[in-house]
Image (tube, rainbow, N blue to C red; front, side, top):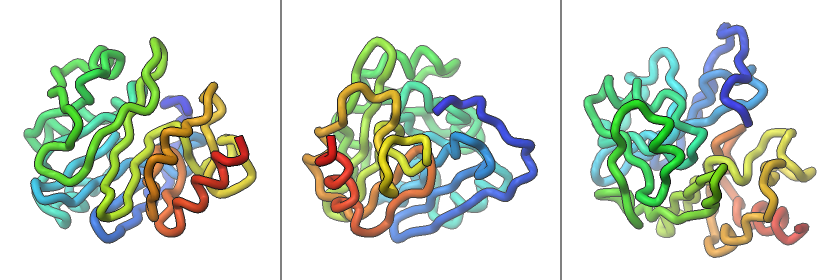
Length: 206
């Protein structure tokens, strides 16, 4: 999805709280329905691919102190810098990502295989000259964060709740390495139960 599918700014954000964090769609009338997440972890709150909205800081404060902002997709720099500046924290980018880093005006801290101070692990999903995407995994909580390769918008391929991004040339079969109960997506409403069955059905069709 492109980041310029703007609406008229009058819609009310959609906010979903769940055990371990919250997710929000700042502009639900947007065609791309950009979804962001805040993860409540041992080291504080990690904000993932944020789109800013009124009242965001209050929502984050209810979870704890912000530990950092993480960008998981080169096109999802979004409002990462504004959110990081307000909370006086660093922006983090997986160490192998160069496209995402080049799209930020501020320096980004590289992160390796683990999100610092958390149980979330970071895995490379797509790495090409035009698309860099990583996923976050918390095996204990059966949570998988996928920013773009799969999502729940009608524009994503498939007739089920979850579909594959139309720009993905090869189905992201690496996602079958995990058995998530929850999938947090970067576009559309996330899936908070029986996500593994949904994911496997979608990928088995490919």
